[in-house]
Each structure stands twice: as structure tokens, then as C-alpha cells.
Length: 524
Image (tube, rainbow, N blue to C red; front, side, top):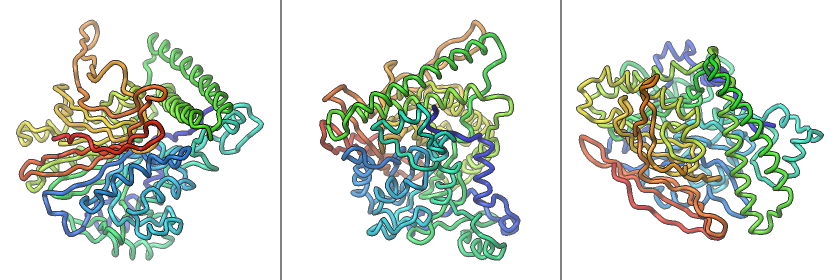
């Protein structure tokens, strides 16, 4: 029994385009760029500034402690010194439901919201940020409940296991509506306008920022804090930021129609069946535990972590089993990124580039490092950067094409660096910030070096492509188990070339107590 349902890429794209009235005639006639915003706070031209990063945060209170709120309190100490917060996705667990925005977003981040002194009065679709929160979609923000769970058929054995269990899964009566809750919470939901006159009035009021040969959304902290689209770009302090929706280019290529492909398919199907049985065993074990007992509560946390890991592996297996020639990849978004990066390199006032999206191309977290989605994202981003490198040529003067890439999805904090990959993603700094909520993960036992096979036929060789310099995640066993939840403050310095001082902020749950610390900064 699946706990989550993930829609096809084509459906995600179509639904999101409807919600923002993508390329509506009224938008086109005003020459509005729906993928750009101007963040105007009076300091946007200052080359030295700071911002916060958080990811995979969207869980609420779990058995008396609230990791997400603890991380939010870490950030509050830096609130006045930072210009905005980037969120790397998975805003709401488990299935992005509007039912959980109050508990899992508004309450934890109330100080960042206008009217946050009375958080219960804030509707999830009425949020206005005092400090800009600029998110991207995570996989959980797109998920829905499978039909079986939606019907709450308690007569069905697997569902009985789920409802008898003591696992707190953050599941209500419905899911995200293929990202509809996220769209209403964060995007400029133009679909709500019933007449052309209403839409025209709105566009003329809020899409007033002048850019190049047109206009774009004018993001005003404390007043109008909507995003124009599921992927977008903005410029701040001479840096170009690119926010992507990786949920629409993460499907793996189809399994080959060969003997090896057939064998791989059988292995995946068997692996999936084994995982489903393991899920039922976890649910059954949980029924015998008492969440009021600290030891049992700790074990329930571990079981929930294991259950969510298994569900993510099943989703990845399903993507491999169901991928075929009809599976769509969001070529339009990848082409957009290519053109925007090329334009950025040809703009004199831009001194650096930051990309952020949910699924990491490089990571050593145990459950994500070799997933089919991870490798698919790596391949498609490489394709974009290879094309950018070819066009930009000597303009880069040996610098990486992107100064910093920020991701989530893997429930940890990790700093990696690619070496000579032979592609446009060489020598880039990558930071995974996905440990800001619940269900932390461990690093893989294979170690910090990521190898990749190059060549074909009998001439394949494994080469080092990336190395992990820092990993902050679950460790230890029993009473020595450590759960270090994390976020980042990033200080931007420098003149012609930016310097990033990455300051990891950690709130660790250890032996039933919180321990806060700031790790040594990472200089990029």
C-alpha cells in the first residue's frame, strides 16, 4: 500500500501553468516576464548582504519536541541582519496538504509573517512575509493521497495497520492537489480572477518593475510577497539567483528493452514487494509502543524515519518501472535556465550566480546518493551547463559557471565540491540544506568520495567526480543517537568576485535535550 501518490510530470506542468495563467493574452500584451521578480527592500544594490537557507522543514510537533520550531528560533537571532530566506523545498509533509500549513509552516515561522503575533488568524493562502521567504517546490509539496487512503477504507488490512499504528505521519483528509496548496500559499494565483478586467487591474498594480524591454512582478516585503511562477529568477547585490522546479525533470530514462533491462525490471519489482512487506512490519511494531514512554517515543521516531525512507525508495522504483518513451521532461524549464545563465554571463553588473532547487545532483546521504532521480537530475543539469559553457566560452575566465548550488531532499546538511567531471558542472560548490525538520538521515557507509563510470563497452572506468567536505546528519545508536537539525546563514562579501561565508546553524536533539551550536564557517 502506497502512502503517497505522485502525478505525472506533464500534469504538474499543466496544472501549474493554469494557476498562473501562463502566457495569458493580457500578460503577453504587457510584455510581462512571468519568470522574474524584482525584490525591492532599499538594499538590493548593496554588494554585501546576508541570507538564510532552510529546507525539508515541513513537519510539526513530534512527541513533545519540535525540530522545525527549534531551527526557526536559531534563524530568529539572525533575522534583522538577513535580507531574505531561501527554502529548498518540502514545505509541508507528508503530502503538501493545506490542512497542515497552520501547524507546519505558519506557527513555526510566525515571526517572519505579517500578523504573526496572531498566527491562528492567518490563512495559508493569505500569507505576507516581513522577511521574504523564497521557496521552491519539493516532492512532498506535489504529493497526493492514493485513492485507497483518500477513501479511508478501514476495512482494508494495510489501512487498518496504518490507523492502528502510533506513527505520526502528518496525513489528513487530502493531499496537495498536485501542488495546488503550495501555489495558493506562495504563487501569484492568477486563476482566481473571474474576469479580464480584474486580471488586468491586478497586473497593472503588481507587475510594475521595469526590466530590459518589459515588466515583471514587484515583490514588496510586508505588502505583496507572491512569486510569479514555480521557477523564477531575481537579482540581488549583483548576484543572479535561479530557483528551479526539479520535480519536472527528475524522471529517469526508460529501462532498456534488452535482457539486462528485463532483469533489472524484475529485480526492481521484487525489491518493491519486499519494501511493502517491510512497511507493514514497521506499522505492526509501532502498535505495540507507547508514545508517552520516552524510550518508545524515540523508537517511534526511528520507525517513522525508516518508513519515510522506504516510501521514498518505492517512489524512486516506481519512476524507473513506469518510465517509457512517453514520459515527459520539462525541456522548456531547462532551456529557460540555459538562456538565463547565458544572459547572466553577458551582463556586466552581474558578479555571480546561485541556483537552488530540491533534488541534489550530488549527495552522500545513504538513501539518496544513487537514486535514479539523483542521477537523472545530474545528467540534465549537466546538459544545460555544457551548453552554457559552449556559448559563454572565455567569458568565464576559468571560473565555475555557477558559484553555488543549494539543494534539499536529502535530510542532512552537506557541503560537496565537484572536481573535473569533464562537464559544465566541474569545480562547483554544492550545499545540501535538507535537515531543517524531521526524519534526519545518515551518511552512506561508502564514504565521502563519489565515483562515476565513464566510457562504454569494455573501456569503462570509475573516476572521482565529487567529494563531501562536511556531513551533518543522524549518527550514533541507542542513547548515544544524535539528531542535528540545521539551517544556514550565508554572508556575501567581495567586490568583483563574490565570496560566500556559509555559517551552519545546528540545533541538536540529544538525550532528550536541545543543544544549539554554530559550526565553523565554510568559505567559498
